[in-house]
Image 1 (cartoon, rainbow, N blue to C red):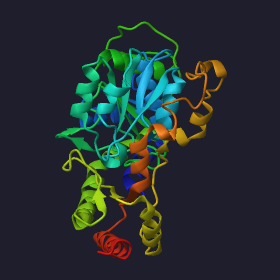
Image 2 (image 1 turned 180 degrees about the horizontal axis):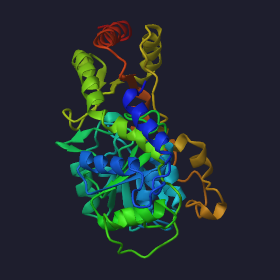
Image 3 (image 1 turned 90 degrees about the horizontal axis):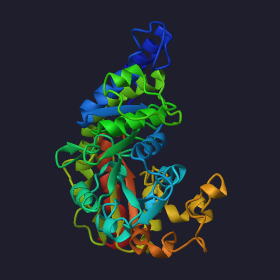
Length: 399
């Protein structure tokens, strides 16, 4: 359950009492409504970047980020085969082709995959920081930038996570965040795009607001880009009010989750036939989910069932699945045939979009067990979870 309380209520009531739910104007043209603007200010300060733009969802943020970078038909974007729907479909939506890559045992992209998957058409790599643990950004950035490949950080699942002392979202060329219901901080929906590049910021603003560049944004960065047709991905003041209150709680939620995680993970280290997920920065991870792998995939079903019988939640919380198992990949379709980046393939699914092309991803995703740790969990809950895992381990693996 989300940490929603009096703080969110107070900011939402402020919007309602002012009767100004639209972010760009209300009753006084000289004083635009403040919530989305304040969210952007505090967000860029929190992440440590120069620019932040509030948008309608995390999916919208991905589309806005790619449009800002000028990614479109004929381009390729490397994404992990193990990722959320939006990673794949947002690339298709801007007309580019998603190229699937393997994960490693951090559940994030293997940096070596960038070199293996890159072609002259590769414009970007989309790096998903999976479930509260940062990808290996130093290696990823080197592999990408040495080839002239743009780095998009998808931080939707991991707001507040750090890598080498810096917030994720501050390592790539542009980054996206989400306030959807299953995320660290939630406003039901909503997203944010962040960057240090003023050109990317202006293009992101234009794409998210029908090509407009309003005075609020021009005061931050004077316009230097020609106008172009955009979409409508604006965040409302009501969403911004909830998101702002939630942003102010992220570090508190993180500290709570890390305390619970510290009561569980050390007790699992070194267990026979079990290994913890690799974490590239253990001091920076968020801690809201414990992942471990069983060495024998045949034991995973029984292990999960026995934990479930002990009332230990081990059901995957996100909608993350291998992309090649999704219907929209199996068909290779877009909203119209001519918009599909796969329309010229003679066979489909083509090599690179089939389960057999991703042996590591298949292996890892059949062997993991995920244990969620939420805001409402207590230290007693964490201790019970640890004891239950140890008990099931003894039963399934004999020690």
